[in-house]
Length: 349
Image (cartoon, rainbow, N blue to C red; front, top):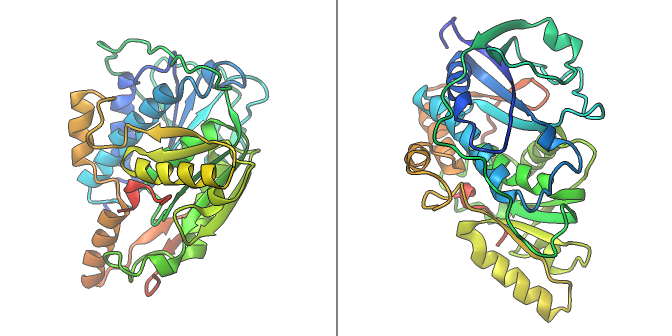
């Protein structure tokens, strides 16, 4: 990597609403261009305070916001031929109870801020000691403040929500799914991670991460995104996982492309006389979604948010005798593993 790059960069910005934050495009692009291994973006808003808004009724608004930010950063990483850049987008409230841990900026050397943005949250002393750079806000014209959906008889959050996938080489598509599951959950998130035995036919299976690594990465991200919840990371060998037998699940998160799996689970639970699940669909990570603008859709088509693309990239560089490093949640780097090989998200293809 060129010496002008910084290993890790932290972006701090406040949001006035849940509308798509186009004004953040310049700072995201600048930070993503400067980062070599980690880019952590923390978005602050009073709307993220506990009980400020209904989480379920703002499902579409929050997933659209997250997707916009992830896509902007991921596109830059792809342009730089750096698909292993670890990008995390976190949502934090402004109330006194929502304090950032002192190590939130671990692995980051520079903090990027929007010029004139006065974040009214208490920031850890360690962040204040880092070098700060300021980037002018972009235009936010043409974006209206979205309305919450009118879902009837749906609580703001559900006690227990489930989702599943392979979660190989955890990327932006996975993180949107995981983030949205945590967003609507008040007590426990159950994540089914596909067993190694079901993945042998995947392309470039020799660079698949081990089951233990995939489970660890899922847990680390969830605990970073929303500390305080219970996270049950389980191994699955079929389309159902715990949704096939656990009565204490109220919600299921799936992508639009895997809605058939949700229908199978619904049929199975009805047959087994298990409580019906509320299904929440991630629309905006679909390359054919009607829920995002044409400009965003075009950008998403250029952004390869898939484990297949990452494995292909690793395999290609492996042939060139280069062993890429993966930045873990604790800030440490480790080589990409080699020789390891229903609910599944379309982002795992």
